[in-house]
Image (cartoon, rainbow, N blue to C red; front, top):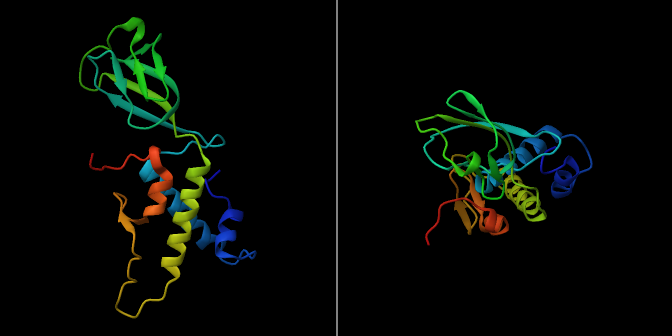
Length: 180
């Protein structure tokens, strides 16, 4: 199930008709992709995303780059490993018995169900991004000119202009680079 339902999207564009459903849905999917670019994958219990990570061994733990729901399996040097411990919130898988994973480049393969829990703030961020994309996409520009960006936009790695409000709503969940 997408983060934004068709009814959510129709509320923003103020239509009950299904005349533009394909177009509206594509804007909704784009809005979710922008939010996921900021916070990482968002977990969908109806359609869980499984990812395989190949990581270097030689340490007592491996760090996954995405938020995780659960770890399905860990393979070390081609052999199935058991007894590992997962810190779901930190995205860390610890080696069994406080030991270390066998050293070597790419020696640890972790299969995990990934995704940050859905929150109201992330839903609202996606709604705000959808509203922004819809309004900019529907804004008329003169021939040969691009529509001018709205003040307060920020550029994200995905290449989209994102209103600061969306970044604020993503808040503590964001994983975009910044200055300390």
